[in-house]
Picture 1 (cartoon, one colour):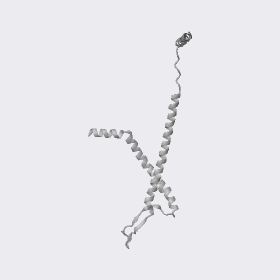
Picture 2 (tube, rainbow, N blue to C red):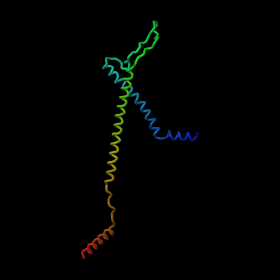
Picture 3 (tube, rainbow, N blue to C red):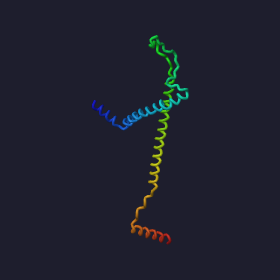
Picture 4 (spheres, rainbow, N blue to C red):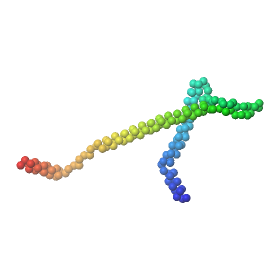
Length: 155
């Protein structure tokens, strides 16, 4: 049992789990932003275009509710609430679009960073290292050798 908890502790401490937990928390906050965008900005505009009706109230009543004389609902309304579905589709499309744009930006930054890094590496490789300085005695001996070879080649 102790080994099990040790393995679990090591699993939790890994970066991937922490990254995933961070992504879930950010995703939940992002969901609130998108929900507000849809409910408070997009849907009122759609409602305005269709004559002031709230999209989530759109429905097809299959059987209306039955109310007795006291105002108590005897049979509940049976309806297809397609307006709620339409709003869910719009939510999904906006979330998908926002994720698409965010990923495009991230990949663009990543590509730009990789290109800059590659250029820096190429520039560093292009810089020629200066030839090591040869001692004067060795230079003189090389010149003497070359002159002797020349003299021997002429004879």
